[in-house]
Image 1: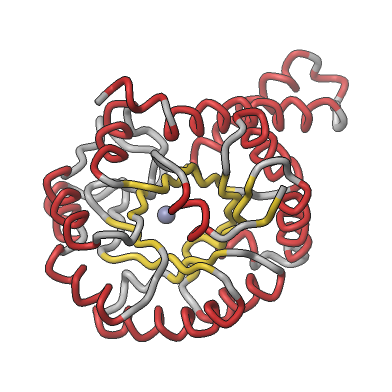
Image 2: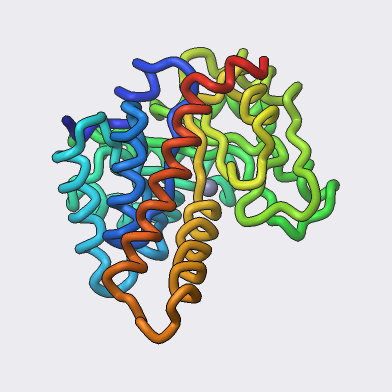
Length: 282
Ligand SMILES: [Zn+2]
């Protein structure tokens, strides 16, 4: 159907849209198919490190091509770029959205780099996501996690001095696999949502959160949910299972297909829950 910006799909649909990490042809195909099977828009994202591997411009090109040919709206998104150059590279490849992550910088510097990227992106019709408050690492204790959470008093200033299309928040969410049950600060999310008004909020670190946590977040105003680690665990899990069924085959044709299908099923399931299923839990 179409390669679309994140601005378009985040504003036009109820619930939240899932964004899934891509590493190669098979993850890209699996994710797009998950969108098609669910009949819902999907965000195909790639992080700065994988995109910047030698030769991986081709993965970016594949992502854009698959989006153009998909039967549902697909946004091709650069996740967590720390620099301007990678954002420009993604735009040159035809991505429809980029994230400039200046969350590790002082507020003024985060605003400055976000504006630099936004100026270029707007000229090309590309959406921009920024982040306020760094995501905690899984090894951080409760105190460190709180210190890194999005400060609601920064949200108004940041949004008044930038013109981003989405804002990633830190409310106790973390990348990677959580140790123990993650705790999210929904009161903080509520406050941020009131301040941010019509700027869609994004929850990173979706792998390992409970369905109740997703539902509560979406009900408050989360419009985009990033799933990275679960793409990897699903893909590698299917790889090991399929290979172990017939070890001597070294089945380079069948194994990637099994991995792709496993990713599709996971993506379909998540997209349906974020768009509709969550309503049953609120
Ligand atoms: Zn993230």
